[in-house]
Length: 371
Image (tube, rainbow, N blue to C red; front, side, top):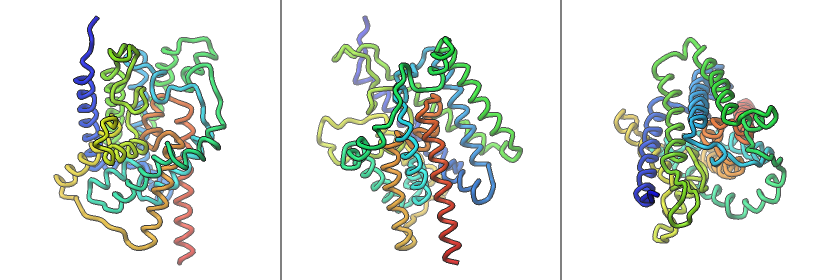
């Protein structure tokens, strides 16, 4: 039996993850792909262009994940979204908090990193505060509150808590075939809806949607296939190399920011090692910075005043707490998680939209009151 070189394979996983996240940062910087911006365009201007970018990315990610799962390239039950617990209240509350927070902070977790790469010092503050509160919600004081409240409400299934596996169990069908059919079907709906917009079918929009969706799939392949070891030589157990969860992961940008700060602060501690999530944080910032410098759009940006500082700090806290409670952000749940058709991701996705919409309505009310 061939014994894999774990060190070399881990380095390969980290290198591939960094390159994909570098591409993600450059692509988002160039095309202005933005979840918060998409919701803002719809609520404030009735413009669905960037929302269609997001829809196209979701569709591409769903179709690709379904094909990889059916081909046996990745096992949906062994991903970070493959548990059997439906934490619907955590997903709803966390998603709403995150959605509201990202509006106050001028962008979600991924957009914050992109803006840091573009020279935004206030996004750097948001990143630090978000990472701190995210870590506290994983292991600190807010973690105690989370575990004692919303995490107590859950539905446990015999199979994986996603639509394909639940449908397969109810209908007596093959989970693999059901995953393929639902993934292709739902993904096609998102793709067709996105492409139906006449003004949407331009190169920049297509590159944004297809590119982001393809990068998510690339991360799934790296984590769930390239980094998969059937029997780790040290533990003699199955392993997914260079992941924080010990399961297959793709992109997410709340908990990984916390892990990145932890790695930087305790760098000399040999137990703190690089993971896919950590290098993704650095990769997105680097990719955005390179694109901003190349396109000459790099600009230093600071806070506009006391109220601006307060809004961004509150928003960062809400994103840190909400992102961990919901087990993901607009990318972690709204793209990566949705590609698996997980129930937690579906609830978190809707809650993020609702929270962001409420935040925009709040801001409009504030402006009208001041006027």
